[in-house]
Length: 148
Picture 1: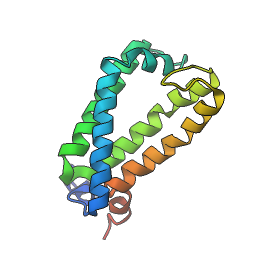
Picture 2: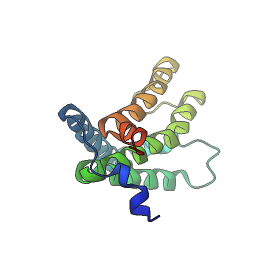
Picture 3: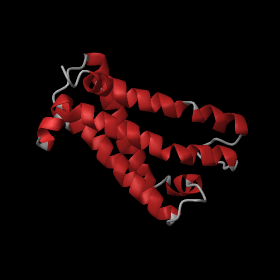
């Protein structure tokens, strides 16, 4: 079976207008965040990279910024493949979650999060981003109905 046939479930997923608005908002937010990784917020993002990551913290920030730009553009432009992009975005949010945990555990002040309470509250927003990516792109529904 060809890859295109295996991914057929993710092509041209039907979504409602509200989902489209939220997908576009998420795409714009990721595009902005990615650009900020590479420019004016770079030191803030470097501070969030966990100490146990075996490569340069600056390289992690640059690479994650590039990924955010790609995902943001994909959410804005590749609407026919939005379900697949939604899964990629959700996985990305899961992969960067250790940075948020590290910020909390190591009491790192960044992005105005200068208290344990603020950093802890932020941890609860990462699952919201995962759900946002899956819902706004119809990714979960498309995957669930892939055999129909």
